[in-house]
Image 1 (spheres, rainbow, N blue to C red):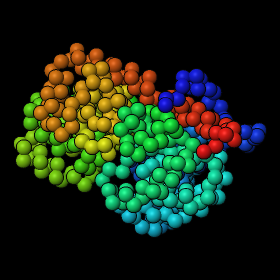
Image 2: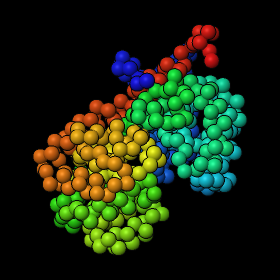
Image 3: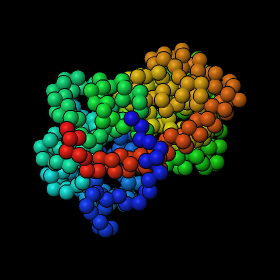
Image 4: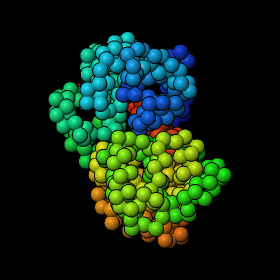
Length: 400
């Protein structure tokens, strides 16, 4: 279900659990994620943005894994973050035994876990925490089939105990084989970002990029990993009169560079690597089109689409059974093509590059959709409304 508009009108003032009064009795919420910035990743960026706003209304703490073997406590932009020691890593999952004790000692009114994160689920189950549990279900386990099967009973137990499950889109909620069994407690809260950061760019930096790369620019942003579909985007450039700027790093960089050379499009494809936020924003404003060529459900939402839309760019994305085509809508804010189809990508990109009026109209519609659906304020208000709903005392007959 979507959080209702009436609930969005609730004040952003501090909310308190039943029976408590006074400023010191603000609702205590513990967020548990896998990592936290400056560790890079979509979930990490979301966690930072959400908690940065929620801490204005709540007594909020974040516990995540540290890359090393020591515990580190920090206060980052007003958010108390504890990074607990990682003993080892199994299938990209940090093993942090200390997480259990942190949950047990937290005295939180609400525990909010960000999934997938097997360690967080196991720590919750072992902690004995008895308060309301909120789960942000960012993605199914896609590649780790064996680990996913072994972990499934524990995930199901946590889902059964949860008071609410947050999905970022109706499409992902309805297409997830896991969430299909828990639709009665699912709530759709799309991701939001601080849009104003992306709406303006340094004009000198923008002009420099255009002078270096030309006037027909396509930009794509993401880790250089299998499901981002960069190989199909590079193949598409053989049919595109323009240049592709790829922002991001990852294990496939050398492979993708070799592919560009083998297709004789190396001069059309620029690998920018990891760049600063200001440089990224300049890329969005220098470009004519944003492309997200993802090929698998591992791309659950594609938050970089929202960044590009806030900058006024039309989007070319792929028709995945996830939230990707929900963010940018076909023929409304961009163009949607089948995944793993280089020819369709090229046709869509060329259509936008060759039609300035269409490009401008879709780009302006993209900017408006970002403001209406994907702002940080809207996401925060919806999350606070959900917290209020789960702490309300329930009649005895309503207990599960």
